[in-house]
Structures are given as structure tokens and as C-alpha cells.
Image (cartoon, rainbow, N blue to C red; front, side, top):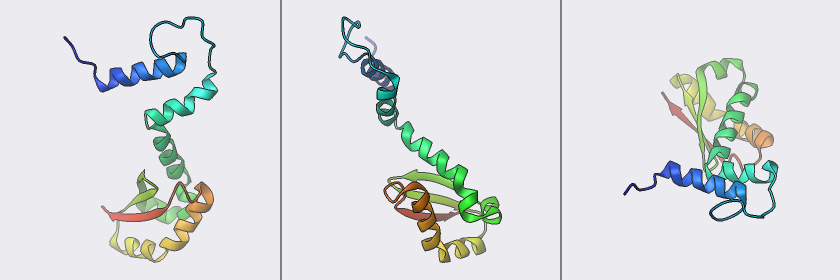
Length: 123
């Protein structure tokens, strides 16, 4: 007997959400619009977090400037904490001194609930 993998369970859950019924064929249930279920599916598969990370990465150069953007890169956004990879120790120190203003700009752009803190990582 083969056990269901995580991928199989997620696929089954997505199809169930899309159909609007717990299991089996469509029966006579009403159809749901994609607009109403896509946010639900993105949240279930945790793809909504990845979309936010991509938005932050796209706006990074406008927030920190072109010089700083060439030597830094947003690394991840988890639980509201944006981690930024910095190549040079001197730039790491400079960004730490500007952390409050950078965080304020990020929060103005993406909201205080989306980005709560900013951390720099050398490497």
C-alpha cells in the first residue's frame, strides 16, 4: 500500500477547494470563481509569502539606492523580518546606521504588518 505524499495531499486539497466539495465528483454544487479561491490556495501553499519577497526584491534598488543595491540583496522575508545579505563589512556598518530610515521606507511601501524588522547578514 502506497502512502500519500505531501504533494499528493496538497494537490487533493487544492482540487477540493476549487470544486467546493469535500470529496468525490462535482455533483450539483455551484461553481466558485477563481478570484475567490486563488488567495486561499496561495496561502495554503505558502506562495503568498514568496510573492511578497519578489515585490520587496523588485523595489529594493529604489529604497536603498543603486550603489547599495549592487552590494546587497534581500535574502528572505519570514514572519515580518526582512533579511538582507551584505557583501562588504563597511557597507554593513553603514546600513546598520541607516536601519531606522530604511525600515521606515519599507514600511511606507509595504505596510507595517508586512515588514516589522530589518536584519543584515554579512556574506
